[in-house]
Image (tube, rainbow, N blue to C red; front, side, top):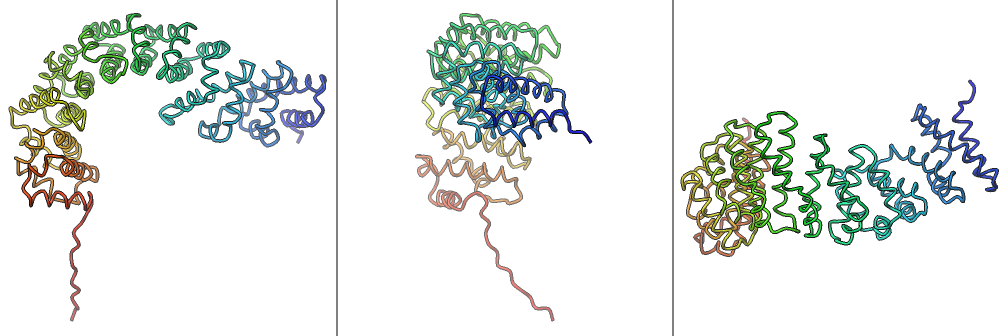
Length: 486
């Protein structure tokens, strides 16, 4: 069988790499790598890929990127990019970090774009530290904030949605802790390109934009710029206008918009009370919480958003002054069953549990909410819910109990209701592991609470302390008596 053309070409490249880099050799290398690029594209890719890397290591390719011929650099960068496509981010990170740093300092934008693609190919969910890693490398930040980086970034921004938003993720990571980085990207037009994504007709693009906005608002400087562009006004209008549009597209945008507003509660660049006072999302949330369909995605998301916003003390004070959203949550909880009640409990746990040392004003709001739940018999009903034994409702209920412990009034309520105390002290190995962990977490929080000794009698507190020492899965040993058969 005759030798395959790509094998012949790879052998020729290996011979040329062993030769002195004369102009003639450089020209032949350029032609051979152009041919190899076409052969990788034509395939079969795996065969050409394996044959190439079996004979030409990455180190040789990287060294060619320093060749004194721009056309050769471009061709080798293209081949290197194709060969790196199947290589995962962890392998790139661990094996080629030295070359990454060198590449970011390379004078040719094609090489810099090649290096950036290795960062951008990484799924942020799989490696959430990747962007931090990129922005922590001094040379990477120097490159990102240089004039010559812009052409490479804009080339990537001309790509598809996935590629564009990987770039925006990197930009957001750079902006997060640096107003000067924001100003650089603003002056270069990158920020405005991002803001235009918010008005895209493609719903997935708009949703990706909504996801990114709170991340950009870690400082007041980008927040004020984004606000001046009318982003929050437009998103709120999107939520309001969607009431008359039952399309799937409209529902998806509405869900993303609600999540954007809820995540803004923890954006460091804003005053939550001022933000929510200006962009009144609470009445919209209240309306959605009260939707009649118990399994509606909009209803569930709205309940979750009330909890997320209420997790911030200043935002909670806004919700209390506005009233409608918290009142809607109380109404739904008091009449709900099953999964809907679980979702309400999760939201209530968020509201009760924003801090291990709650402030007086916010803690008072939590108490007022507590007093309205189940018409003042919240702990009684919650104990019954937990004792039913269903994993989700048990865990959600125990999470609420654990957050109650952080409030002096909450600890008093728990100590005053013997049924919940008895349940907490009763070990049951048949319960789900996660429920046992939460049960232990409640007791551990009680024991650590400063007021606990004064709230519980000595015997009960001693039992709580012993439970905390023994851990979540302690089992009492039982003696076994062997009976000899006759």
